[in-house]
Amino acid sequence: MKKILITGAKGFLGSHISKYFKNLKFETYGIGHGDLLVEECRMIGLDYWFKSDVNIKAIKEINEKFDVVIHCGGSGSVGFSMENPYEDFKKTVDGTLEVLEYIRLYNPNAHLIYPSSPAVLGECNDEPIAENYIGKPVSPYGYHKKIAEDLCQSYSEKYDIKVSIVRLFSVYGNGLRKQLLWDAYNKMILSNSEVEFWGTGSETRDFIHVEDVMDLFLKLLSIEDKFIILNGGSGVKHSVYDVVNLIKEILHSDIKIVFNNQRNLGNPIYYHSDISKTKKLGWEPVVNFNQGVKEYIKWVKKQK
Image 1 (tube, rainbow, N blue to C red):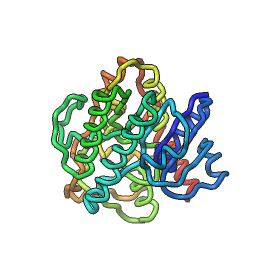
Image 2 (cartoon, rainbow, N blue to C red; image 1 turned 60 degrees about the vertical axis):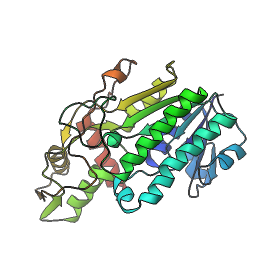
Image 3 (cartoon, rainbow, N blue to C red; image 1 turned 90 degrees about the vertical axis):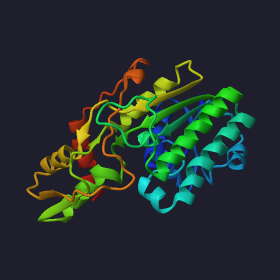
């Protein structure tokens, strides 16, 4: 039986990974902060949970050899990085270095998958972004993700470690309790007049359903590349205006939507992925965005 280690397995992405690979008959191990009851582990498909900082010592003490390591641990918020740059660095950069060094020393045959972000590229034009685009991050989050990517490439080249980096665009799906879709829903149900959003509404994002991300991660396990960077997106751009109005339509709401025309610092205006490189692997997203959002809103309503 193959074994997979997921750092940050309690989180939105990590919990989906554990459940997905458990269904594929992997033995699943998770490590990260916070407690998980046995029943909670079962619900997200975790065979073993280790409450700990993500570091060499803690991973080594699990005393297993993993076929796959997916490193989801670390900071997941531009806003957090703007307010806490030191902590963001420790979580993202130091945490990634600990995982890489663990693999180098004790588990050199493991395949590391690192979920990164297009934030490494900073401001981009309103056109599909390729992986080789040379940009400049506009937030500590983006800078730190870029450093983590560079560490991954360095370890892959110098120590022959297999590393796949996926720059995930706007991942959504059941379980997500932050970002635009979650915020828009909550604003609309809590107001009876109008709701305000950042920006002009013309900002664009590329949404990818978490189920499509899982299929992409699985596809990565069959590639031969020792090191690869890919875009994990849908290749389709949606304006923030269209997204919030889609949610308004789903809710059958007559609420007024207002944009404050202010920049949300650290968040670029345009994000739209070029997934031609990813498609060459034989993968492309299948979840329709409108349908995916409807299913997500159903899930959110149940949580309320």
